Length: 459
RNA sequence: GCCGCUAUCGUCUAGGGGACUAGGACGCCGGAUUCUCAGUCCGGAAACCGGGGUUCGAAUCCCCGUAGCGGUACCA
Image (cartoon, chains in turn yellow, red):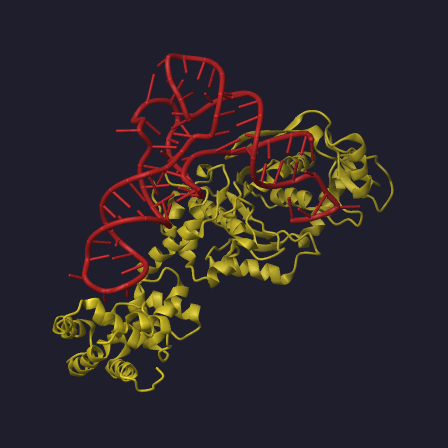
C-alpha cells in the first residue's frame, strides 16, 4: 500500500486561472500520492516569461488551497532552475546530441512547405552564437511511450523535427525543461493531460540523450464542454474560482471531478475524500474524453450540503455571503439546509429573515384572493395567542383554520407565505414563521391584511 | 497534410468473449409525500458509431471506414 519511492508532480503553467481540467489533473495526482503514501511536488511551469505572471501563480495556489489539495514540496519555479537546464544543455552540446542551428521558425516552416510535412526537419550545425539549439532526432526507428492507461504507444522518429531545446539567448523550452526537471527531481510517475502524449517522445529523447531513466507516464483523457469542444470560458464555470463563487463545496467538487474519467467497480457515486483516496488508482482511469456536466455537480453538491453539520453549514454559508456566522444566520440555515443545492441558493430562501419583505406582484396576485384578508387576520390573531412560538405549536394552532374557512390548506398557507416572505417559494411555512419571530410575523401579516382591505401600505 | 489518441443511454460511467432481455448515477418524464419550491420515495423512456473478420458465441479481440479530439511553435 505504501511506496516510499513514489514521487508525483503537478506542474501547471501559470498562463491563467486553474481550469477544471487542470484541477482534475491536480486531484488525480494528489489522490495517487495520498493513496500510495508517495510525495506530491508542485512545480510551476513558468519558462514562458511573457505569459507567466505572479498573479496567475497566486491564482493557482489559491485554487489548490480552496480545493484542499496540499503538496509536499514546492511550489518550485521552473524558471529558477535555469542553471540546471543550462548544465544539461551543455552536456548535450558536448556529446553532440544537440547542436546549434541558424534556422528560424520561419525557415523551418518554409522548409516544410517545400519538402512536405511527412517528415521532420533536420538542421545544419553551425557555430553561430545566436542560433537556437536543437536535439538530434534519429531518422529511423520509433520512440515508444509506455502509457499506464493506453499501453505502448509508438511514434515514428522521422515524424519529429530536430526540435528546439533552447532559444538563441539560451533560455530553454518546455519539452526540454520538463524532461530535465522530472528526471532531476526524481519524479517516478507523470500524470498529466492527454494533450502531452505526443510531446512525450520528445521528452523521452531528451532523457535518453542525457542518460536518465524515464518516469512512468499516465495521460489522462481531456475534459470537454457540453458542446463536445475543449473546455473554455464560454462553458460557464470553467475555473476553480468560478466554481467557488457559484457556491459549490470543495468536497463535492473533489467527488465530482474524481468521477470525471474514473469510476468505481461497484457503481458508488457519493464518496467522501477519504474514500476517494482509498479507492483511487491511476491505472483505473478511463481513456476517453469526458464532458463537464454542471447538473450532476449540483446534485452532488446538494447531497454534501445536506449532510453537513449545522455549524459547518452555517460557517460555509457565512463565508460565501461574507456575513458573520451568528445565531440568526444559524437559524436561517437550519430552515434552508434541506432545500439548497448550492451555497448561492441559501440567501434567496432566507433573505426575508434579514430584510423587509420585497413585493413580488406576481406572487401576490397569484395567491391573494377575496377571502385572504379575513384568513390572514385570523392567522395573525391565532399566532398572537400561541404559547411558544415554535414550528410544532404554530402548526397545531393553525391546523383548524382551513376547515373553519372551508378551504384547502394551500389556500391558507400560500397567502401566509407571501405575506411574510414576499415570495411564493420559501422554506416550510411553520419553520419560516418561527424563525421570523412572533412580532415580525404578526406585523407582516397585519400589513398584508391592511393592504388587502384597500389601505395603502407598502410592504 | 503528417503523427497520435478515443468511440456503451442526452451526460458521467459499469462491463475486458458466454453471467447482457447491456447495470448504476445525473438529467428527463410520470406517480406519491394533500403548505410552495426543493428534497425524499416509487415507476418509466433512453445506449454498445458503421462495415468486415476471428469464434460455437463479440459491447468485449483484429482490420477498414467514419467521427471527435490532441500534437505538429525559438507556447506550455
